[in-house]
Length: 237
Image (cartoon, rainbow, N blue to C red; front, top):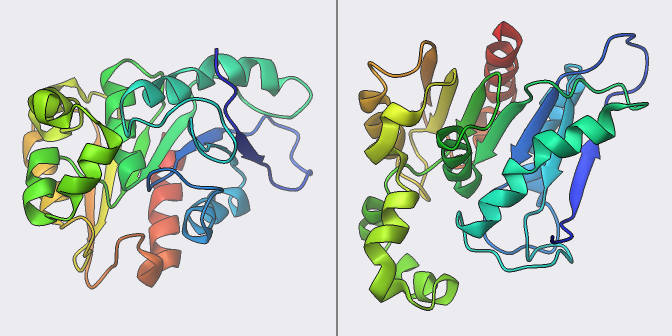
């Protein structure tokens, strides 16, 4: 029931078959528009022939509603398969089983979407946190920010943390999954990717962990390698 802004990017025409769609879930909290870092993360997919649909999420870019950082805003992602079926006609899009791609906070939402049955062919994340309580301990400045996002944070801390901690329900992640993380990520320590990977050992039929030595949060330090890895993983599926 909310109007939420999204950006649809498509390659230049020239291919007769319907293009697979990557749904990109951005990082950060409330933003006026997609950041240059977010836009850079999707460029490799468009160059490789994918279409990319990026919801700004509620509360951002003039969208209605309030961002709950992985709360009710998850509905903005879960609604997209139905939206794609309406968008596909005349736009050269394949609405069946899109891919999911999330950065940072968006990666956390990708995990939630997979947990809740999003019909993705495969998913990939960059710099995603997988344990909310650990993140609060590692970055104390997030505690006062948490009270701004969730005014009732003190009363609901356990519930909020569990919902946003994929490491604690890794058995629900049964879609092919690629975890990418920089070893020098100062926003979300690489330990988050390692912790989730250790729980996925008996989980999805196909999953991969790629640690980029010296890589930063968005892996802009390894942009070509990051894009090549993600495109190859999606192409495999």
